[in-house]
Length: 256
Image (cartoon, rainbow, N blue to C red; front, side, top):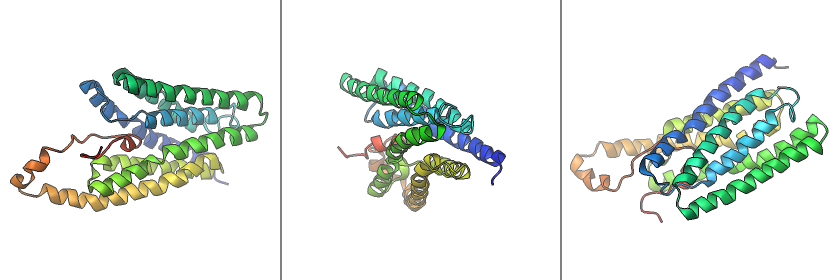
């Protein structure tokens, strides 16, 4: 039996990696505020992330888990709730009317579904084991949806042959976060925490491999004479660090 201190230590490391991951969109939204425009960014990734954070914060609380066995899960996802609410609020403030309405139409069902999940798990399910099964099953679906965005990022990197859409440190922290939470879940024999990261870990490895492959091409292009790249520079976007879920909402240059 693995000592609980080892599991807690892994949870703390997972918190650190996840905090860097959740905070990544700060640079993106600084750009939104500066320009006063949400450009081509979509609110969907942030709404999905909010739903995921709400569910796993609830999952880690003593109402669902037994005591504070999953305290690290609640702390990091609680922080995630605050950040995602801030990002969505900024998005709604600067979005045009149509996108603003669409964002609110997504947020309301998410809050309603979470409220129903919390209500039924509190008043109709009477054991911690069954509550974990119920809330964890809903959370599993939300996590799989959230982890689908790296596939879009991988496709964009292959299509554009550019790692602009997949910054190295973002891919690294995504991999580390998934790996640590997978270990945390396995140590506690909690498949509802470990299972989503069975998808997140290979996605992180794929992103790092693609970065290594296409970074060489980027570095090679950077070594060309200045005159050969002048025309290309006119069409380049400003590279910004993006959230793993931001990546799914951005389009390569020239794509409609």
